[in-house]
Length: 166
Ligand SMILES: CC(C)(COP(=O)(O)OP(=O)(O)OC[C@H]1O[C@@H](n2cnc3c(N)ncnc32)[C@H](O)[C@@H]1OP(=O)(O)O)[C@@H](O)C(=O)NCCC(=O)NCCS
Image (cartoon, rainbow, N blue to C red):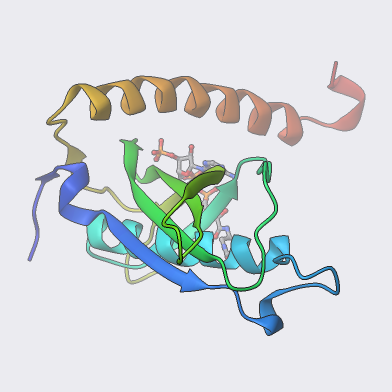
């Protein structure tokens, strides 16, 4: 089905995991890389649902882990499209840890990922536009727009020959 405009709610994904010993280091806290793989996984599901085709991770912004997550904690990941360009989209992922016995929740990190939709020849291809339906979605869109510009500036700098970088 080819839909030319979608809302963030049309593709949002929420997922929950429990930290088991195989996800943790010898201090009993979660490996950052495990959490990062879960972030990538929920984000790609959102991207696929928004664009209705194959999507690849083009970049992941810096991730700061602001609280340790322990064995036995639940990890809740909420992901949605913040912004769409022509072929790329920014997906935001909020990661919260929850003590399953008390229900106490603490924000662990927020991540921003850029995915690019590919056609059958693996060429970037146009994706559905985004219809914003709430003030919160508009706030996320406007913040994401600033990050998109920063990423473009950074990519441009990185693509310049070394001697020409300032
Ligand atoms: C992502 C990829 C398809 C982009 O291909 P490309 O030929 O550079 O594409 P373009 O220059 O036409 O850019 C396409 C879009 O992606 C965006 N983009 C490209 N590289 C990006 C990056 N590193 N970060 C953020 N956005 C990026 C561009 O701004 C553009 O957005 P727009 O169409 O919405 O304006 C290509 O770099 C690729 O295949 N990378 C490997 C992806 C992968 O394997 N990921 C798995 C993890 S290793």
